Image (cartoon, rainbow, N blue to C red; front, side, top):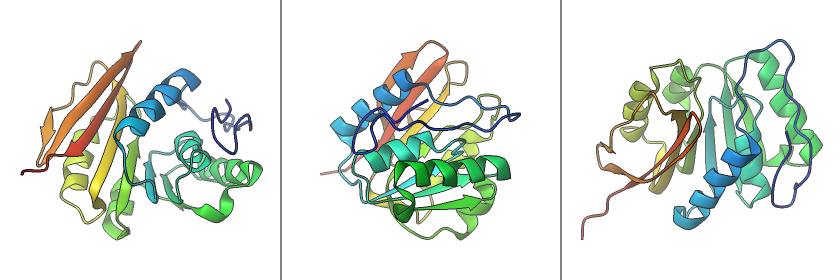
Length: 184
């Protein structure tokens, strides 16, 4: 696995041994960032939930994001994220929270322009997490939210004022992009 674009392009990213992960493939990561580049306007602060190896947030930093907060509950993965950030030269622009997503949502208070979610495909609580996120103070006025999920877990076309603006499928992976509907 490697960073595919930006200032850290080509840097290899490690994955912890003995931990069951489904890292986002280079193909899917490229598709996600292609979609983000066409709809996201605020790259100043990114939240990477279910961060795993940190590949999504590191890709965002490499492509010009100002800051990324990573949330991952597995301590071995948290250590790998920190190592990957150091190796990519991006550690000064990030913080790793080693806790559950539910706990992080209870104390984080920054507004994010981009929120990335890559939950385990078997984790059905992602719908609850989305509902909490859209009602939280974490969502900036012009926030773009990206969910990488199984095609077998269809998401709603709307959560509150947020509507599905793009959706792409790559094998068993579905990428859903949400933005707030602005009434004029």
